Image (tube, rainbow, N blue to C red; front, side):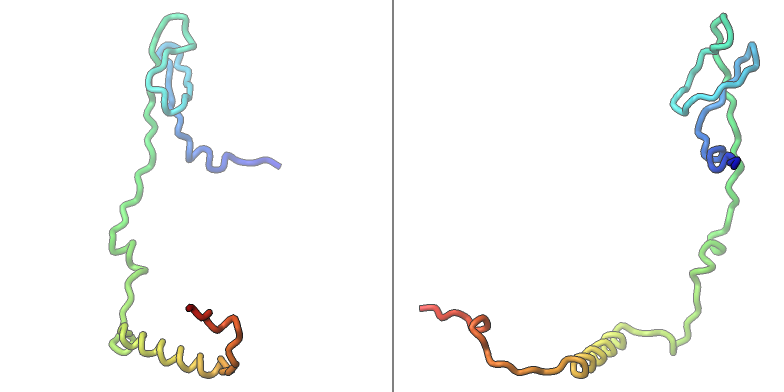
Length: 116
């Protein structure tokens, strides 16, 4: 099975250098800022070739946030007081319906020790 370049070509952060005498191209890591040509016997500096990346598309802010807008009518607006009142009512009814009350006599574990 043959694989393609994948993301490697898009995420390549190496610097591209060109020898002015031989025209050969060499790629180095990003931390290299100056480079002497290894292709000639004479000492000459490699020329840095800047690669241009495609510009990012300019998207207006309204378009970016358009999926976040919604319109609510007064009937759909819920206040915090109504939420709190609804939760108290539902909690009380759930406790009364689902939890049976069992009365037991206190055991030795439940009774606090007497202090003298």
